Length: 610
Image (cartoon, rainbow, N blue to C red):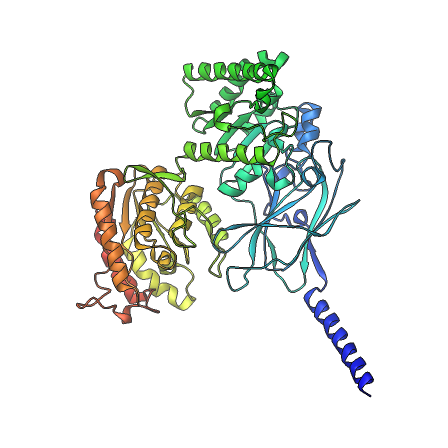
């Protein structure tokens, strides 16, 4: 009898485990990014989306008749392309097919033909996802990323970026999650891209996995969209390719072709470089252009290597001097010394390993921030200071995204970019949910009441609400650096961030972060009048808010000439004569109600009109 009971118990346990497994892992729902191109492009890293709806190529079909056959063949390889999506699934599966060989003698399968998956959490932190399960490279390649844990609360999931093969053409690809979990593709950003014209190194040789190509590192860590037009062995500064570069409305052009122009090809460099840059400048007079020198990491053992690379660099420097003499502006240079390769950076003396790729990326990121004027090390109090970062108190304020509120943060960013293109604002308010809720994300019955004070305050002016719910200073920095203040000239900009940093940063850090945000705004809007609003009073934080505002006011007064921003006190009318919060003006002790927004408008009125 006891044996039978034990057997029944074991059977029930087995059945329960099997049922649990079935419940956890149900039917896989597959999504093909190319099947969903109905008004939106979901393949990041290319420009000609309307001409590339059915493949993962980098140049449109018409290029086959215009560029050399070698360039055309390489353009069909998916280097630099990626798919962005959002999911809360604990497992992500990808299956796909490629057309070419899986690997090369000096580059592994995971780099040539593999994928790489990175997740961005709710606080903007990047997290690499390993694929140790069901990884197979057969006729159909399978990746499975299991046991994904969401660390940032409420299991809303991650924003993902899936990097495609560096040296293979993708025939088709599908992303899958279990039924019951979210999977939604993210459209390509409207932000202008960085464009790279280069060689096998730019294409990604010899990264151990696709995410370690320097172009993908730069794209991932800066957040700037990037188009990879590097062609292995065929980055020759050719006029036919420059014509395609000219079709792209770029944020920055990078020309890194010298590794393919050595020895007998050195005499081509000067004239081709000058001609190519002048072509770009004719169509894009203000877009920065960066020329990059060739490295020579194996110089420690080979004088021939030194001569080979140094000759190419010297000829490019001559072209650079010629262009400057002809009056070409916004032209930049990245030298061999700035790349700073070591003996451990290479695979076979030409192509970088992962160490070299990291060094490449670091040098490029430093130079890109310098060019854009958004360097992570910004002058504060006359000294170089690293940007502080929210999340954990005391860490760097590094520009980053967020997804802490239920609305789609990145989608709102794209809506702002589109709105700015359609109608340039005269007045901008950069803030968090306090600003956001003034005009948006209210029940239909409340919208009119809340908007009334906004419409009255800005009557006759085009004012744009750049308030994003739950934003911290670092999120405002990211938005400023990624186009929300570009392409127009505003009269006035009001900054209302800081209250969400109370839980993550010290008072002094918050004030320093505000100064950095002012500097970023000044970089992108040099003619605008900037108004730094004090933190709004909030329940339970009145004393601390008063201390921060006093520090902020003191800093702005002391550095008036450098920061050129005016402080606005936001507490009048929102606290009583004892300094206590007037609760009747707030919905929750933080966000004003309709009457509270009337007081906010009153505090801003004279600055709007002056």
